[in-house]
Length: 444
Image 1 (spheres, rainbow, N blue to C red):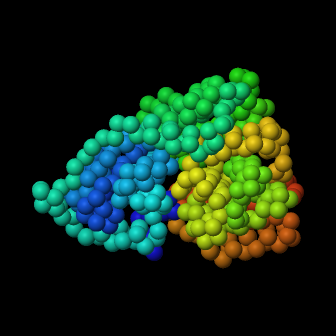
Image 2 (image 1 turned 45 degrees about the vertical axis):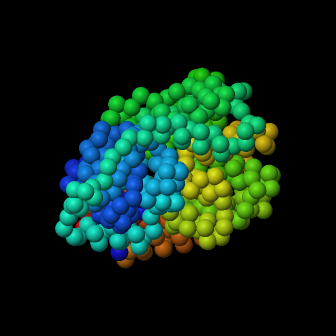
Image 3 (image 1 turned 90 degrees about the vertical axis):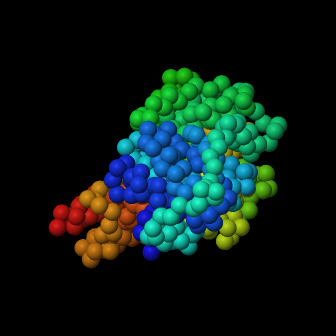
């Protein structure tokens, strides 16, 4: 059982728990021992939060002490680091980010040499090294550090190359919301270089404003801007660029399910669709039914893009994602990539000769309520008898006309309560009742 790693690396409040300079230095050393085998080179990228400078220096010291050389990418999206790790033939890639969390949080994500998330056994091996005393290699074996000057340009060209060269977006006016995060110096240029008129939002990071009232977790600003600007559509990324949401010309938000549906329909029309689409326990039932109408299979996994990728590899599928906007186009890249996914949607609009307004409406989304109940610390209380009784009662009341999901967050001290069904009033009532049952157990 992993002690330090969650479902997506290590994450938390800066200065607390494991998110401290001394721990991150030791983590860099441990990762260097496992991923670099004491040698090789490892790439480091980061998002725009202020603490990234501190943790970049700590990781650098730990990796060099393990004898690993480093290539510093500066501000770079999480999927950008994954891509560059592959092209540099590096031993691994590391991203300093807390994704969609506020600036007070930070974390560390890892990629293998293939640009994939690390398997459990490798994370466990790193944890085992963390329990050992740090020993610096001989001075003659210390790693070296270099900065990659053209990292953004390389990634921009890669993104543009994921759609046919014959396509351009000169007829599109697009609002691009970068959440004051890692996409600020790449995403606008991608769409501009493909011909679109781009209205920028959330592209002035100051170290403290990442995800603040902008981005995919706060899409209201995007939706307003699209209507005010008379734009064709809007695109919102999260702080590290692995999530994307979009809105249509009327300012109506499209979640990851709807975007994944549009991409899947386009792949089917092009004759390139392969395998089942993979979603998670959070994927809307209406999305599943829309895929069924197209004759496309659907499978669910645990929440987390690493589990989606595992299922895609198992079934040789190419498309998967979550409602939150993690979308994996495995025929284009090795991990969830917000910019690449947005480009696939735009390419689909041209291929299907339809607007995003029309295609988004083809997915009838069932009412779904998601409530987060905060804990005093990360612990799994979902299995307590009182909570399980409340869960069973809710499922019985839905009588096959919906779904209930209770799960602890893998990245925050939260219990997530999700209820979905045909009757919106019933869904809201049951979600509140389950959340109250969880709060009651926390108070005991």
